[in-house]
Length: 94
Image 1 (cartoon, helix red, strand yellow):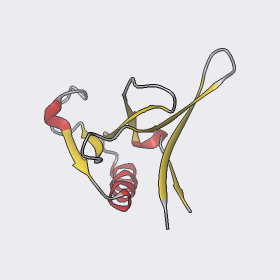
Image 2: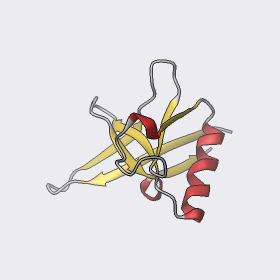
Image 3: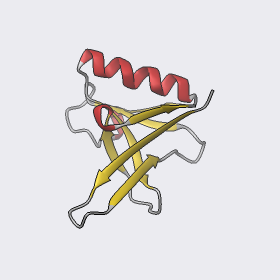
Image 4: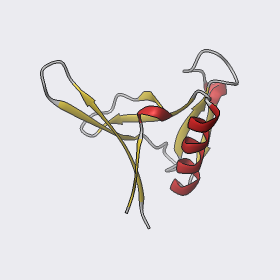
């Protein structure tokens, strides 16, 4: 089984932008939990997961608990990274 994560954003000009996880240099998913520090883009909020199954479980759990869990993602053809809320991330299992 393979797990992928994607967010599709509709742009004002009618095009769509697909976002994929932005992993760090050690190939870990970068997650952010706003329960640590209120300002979401602080390093203190970051934690790292290697396994996609663990990432999917954390994202699903945060939706149930109403927490502010986010994943660092980037456009497929770009480098700029954004924090994307769990509610906006599609989990694709194949």
